[in-house]
Image 1 (cartoon, rainbow, N blue to C red):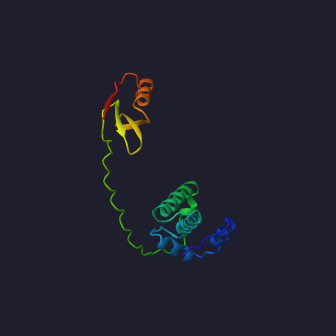
Image 2 (spheres, rainbow, N blue to C red):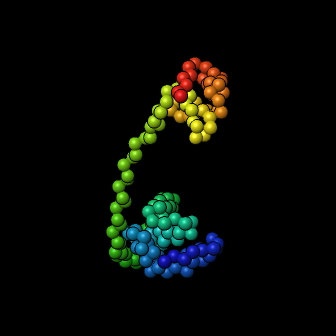
Image 3 (cartoon, rainbow, N blue to C red):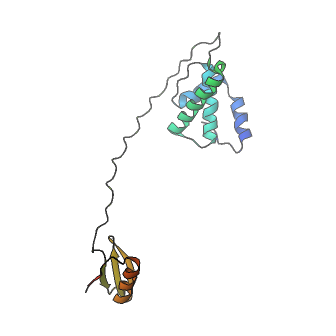
Length: 163
């Protein structure tokens, strides 16, 4: 288990205190099989760094693997096995497959309750609603004020009053 760090200095001190066995254990715990001790060392460092950044799970392993590949591409000697090094044998626990993505929901379509320009009495609210594009566009205390609203905003719409 990698501890939480208050500062970056604490994280660096922790990385420097790790042994080769610790680094291999950290890499194995995260389901990565390194090619050699050098690669395990770099991977473990990036795993600790990712944990200190708040990464977990697949995001953490992807971060460590991507950063390791990038660093080894720049400095190839970091990924090479040492001449006296024995191969690493690590048992990696199988990673559960990602859950299948949920089927996308059908887009919601607004119900058209009234035709454009319809004015409806709302006694529960004490006034009248004017409908346009499937929604109540205006609420006014009188029919004349709703009709005036439509005349200003939508002059092409003919108003119809429903009692």
